[in-house]
Amino acid sequence: MHHDLVDEYRLMIHPVVVGHGKRLFQDGLDTKVLKLVDTQTFDTGAMVLTFQPADNEE
Image (cartoon, rainbow, N blue to C red; front, side, top):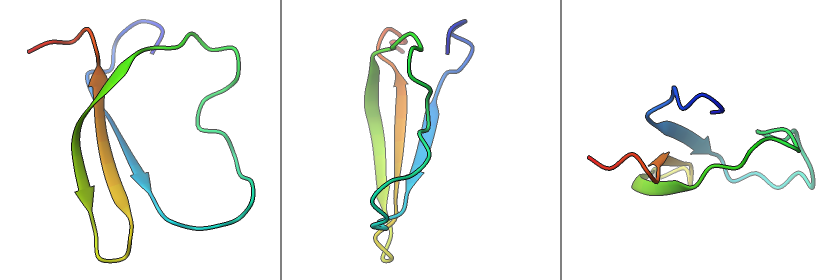
């Protein structure tokens, strides 16, 4: 993220209630503005969210 080497992030989300869990990104990292470019929902309730850096215009 820091070097802008990633063109796209795809996050798969599973609806599970656990109360807490591991963080995907560490505290203290530089924040980047991402735009949501696609969503996909499955019958199980799982979702795939596709993000691209906001300054990465096509």
